[in-house]
Amino acid sequence: MMWPSFQWPFIIALKISWNEIVVTYKGNPYPTRFALKRVKTGMNKYFRHHFICRECRRPVGALFHYRERLACRHCHDLVYACSMK
Ligand SMILES: [Zn+2]
Image 1 (cartoon, protein in one colour):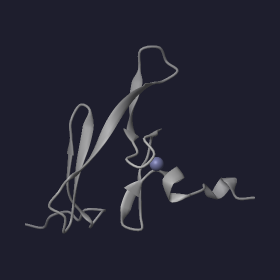
Image 2 (tube, protein in one colour):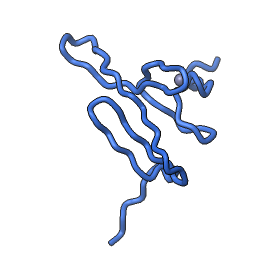
Image 3 (tube, helix red, strand yellow):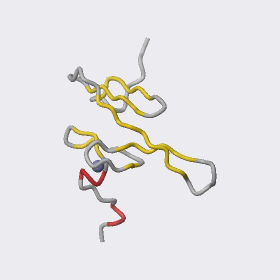
């Protein structure tokens, strides 16, 4: 049987629960936990989950893997292409 390839070869396991995701990196026996925060959307009773960045504690919608670490775009000093003028 052929297993489908995983997009992130540095991650060997991802586990999600109600309030956190647990990431297990290749070559590291200790899993890294990212807390999840429920953020209300504009539509009254709906909410979405945001990750809590482990470095700055900000709730963010996306984490980026760059230079061997998962963190938010603020911590990686990333800017969107559309904001480069
Ligand atoms: Zn951050």
